[in-house]
Image (cartoon, rainbow, N blue to C red):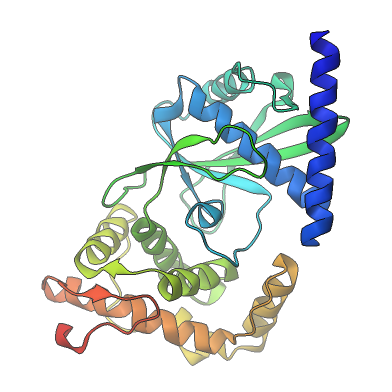
Length: 308
């Protein structure tokens, strides 16, 4: 009886997701992946390893209520504790087997594989691949884990929004200030080699839709740059100058990013870069001068003239 009920739940969940995909005119496979990530995060939050991982990356945007956000096929985490690949595989196989109320999806612990991440950012990390099944639909999940970064002011606890009426994942999550600090540090570090158009988009969205305490944001920037051994920029970084945003290849990368992610915004890379400069450089400049940045950014900006 239990097996039959489980099959019925899985089939029902798959059908409801298909109905939702049709109603919202979104890619069904992308919705399946998002459901898989959501339910895996639920198991993480219910496991003994909840305190060892902090959610970061694009999956934060639905949590923050961003209406137009870029969809993602993976999940990013900051990890604490043992970073050895073998240890992480053991941890994630255990998470796959966490007992929860039937939500239709099963995660295959034997499928958990891990590899080192090495890219231009030099910080590395570990990428885990996990297979899941929902009523015969195979779902491939990717989890990227970094170690060693600093969170300012501190990790928050939050309940993650669900696609259906299942219990919500309860997780530790990045604050917006640290998201901004890490993305801006990447811009400064990579320079002309930067092809991470998602960072430009995300900083533009965050500055457009949220208020920020200037002192907290300035502290997050300073601490992240220090932890990543990157000097604070004394002048506008190359990624925010015309040498970058007027480059034909960068313009193509920006447009390709918008098309690939299904975003409907019509904004030029030059406009986004100008906005980011006005948003992030004032707190950076005050950090360099050793001044406290006791002003508030209201969504969309600019900073109050009183900061000067």
